[in-house]
Image (cartoon, rainbow, N blue to C red; front, side, top):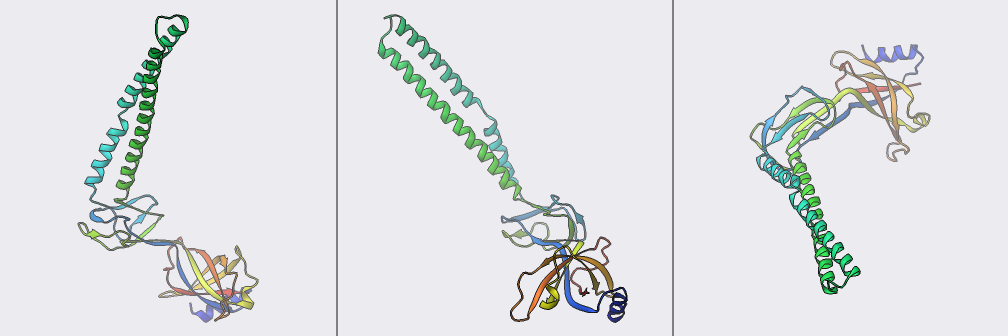
Length: 263
């Protein structure tokens, strides 16, 4: 269908032929990589595959990180030191209460002996508090080790298709180096630039008509305005308008141009 015929059809349907050029893009698109350097161990997906948010796309060699997680977990799960210090404190507390009661009821023990028992209890209580702090640190170190291990995996940030994979197994990667491109083309966005006197009546949520270019034919879509810029560009006197449209049939290739028709 030609652009002029599309415009004629829209006009006959009650739409004026005022139209504005725009460019389409996926609603969600990203080039992602690891946050740490390393060497690729496994690639779990292929280009063109559809993945879900949270799926593992690839992972780095992670032997050291797995060992560190195992070691810190053993330490974090070991409560013997904490139990021992608690038992010692409880014993000293009983001794202190017993000798204090004896001191208050008779002259069989001296004040120095009471003071010594109290000092032993105070020291054991300090040891127990220190043991509790140590267990918190052990738990945090285990959590840090697990967090470091998780950085060895590249995870899909949203549902979408794998557009490209820029590395192979056993290749080294740098931190934040873009490796995988992922895009969700089921919903797309068109960005158009509208003259100020036609854009002032537009608002988010408003329904509009789109005509999208293609290799063999033009395609029409119903769209919903997502955003209207609150300002006018000083140099062009245009306002940016973004329209969301459904592409669940994947018949529109994001990146093609098109037109926005306004009444």
